[in-house]
Image (cartoon, rainbow over all chains, first blue to last red; front, side):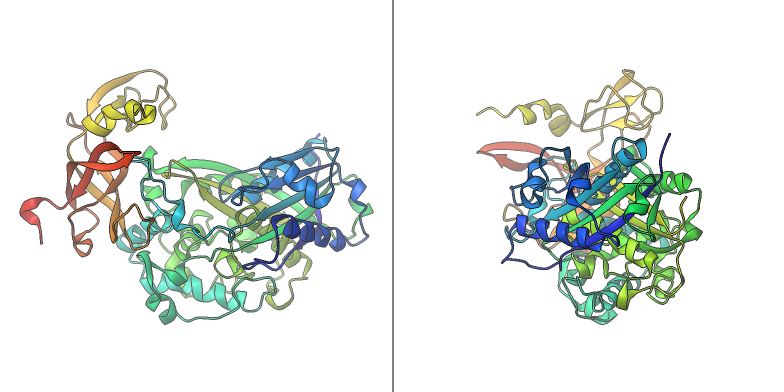
Length: 389
Length: 137
């Protein structure tokens, strides 16, 4: 019998350029913060198993031991998860599935990434040896290709794309864990240095260190930890590639629609039921097309939708109240876990200065990643709910 | 000097050899898969070749790249037709000798055989795209 799963604790560290902290320093603190967050307290010995999300950018966490060393969590199952930029959310999803299936009652999810110890960042990620399938394709190029086509096909303007950055930096300025706390306007984004036409510097997320953790439990033990749990209502995970020839993949990411369909089906809801979302805005255009791929608006209407203020903090469907990857930062393994944490806090009404005011019943978390054959994408989505499903 | 991956890929990289799925018409390029990535059909393919030109589906102009690349570098998603008709292959195309300002979605571009990069001194050859000569600005 499948069991319901709840989040009962969430912790993270302040994201940023953390040259004074090691990978283990970050992971340890995120873990301790998650334990501290559990309403009725938790004994570390209660944890049955752990899922550890990291791309191991800095080369010091290639197995489950990367979690064990900083947390002291030995002698039990630790599964290291890597799924490109969807690593954190896939780690969370994997833990949820184990608890659902009954093999685990209390699970730890921890994601961490040391991005700034090497200087190359996203540009150095360009494949050098892939003829036809991604030689010279940087991250801004992969996502920028959707921007050029979206503007041509739907008349989306450069200024509408910039609105995503303006919104997320506004939110980030109020979010205590964000890497960037400054605000900007549309002109700042449009006038910032060009990275890859049509995207400029302020269309891109920064290179950020960070760690985040949460504790999930089964329905059987939830009352031991809190009277105010947040439940996991649904989850989805899918891959696709533009090589398969769908024109949708020129203006968005079919993997996101596919993962969303799975997650909505599992939760027995539709996009209209989502009250708040943390989505993957590695670049402005990524968030804009994700509105459409998640069904928040019709295909092609993302530009108008953000310009009209729907995803703003005071809008009817706030997206990235935490400032998103653009302001909060994108320490890859930690990103999805931190997004889940933010949805958890929003649904509990504990999100402080970025608390949404539309009293959401459901919140959605979304990551998208690309692989070495840089034609495809992997999307992972988790939906949390205030009420038990 | 022996570079197995590039030896395996020569038919595609140097001669634009591809395969068409007999079940759904999808073009496998530059890979030679047995399993169709679109319909899942296994093992029924017809050999085909791609034309030395294609149509720009979308593009970017990269200003920041590792040292191996010249900038600005235009990069496109291209539909490259089969010589025998049917569906095109959809692939990345690197541009050369083309003013980035002149690239447009829907534009026809020529594919030119070029030295694309070196692996430890071994030159790897394949195709780059450019505006057709008669139409150069």
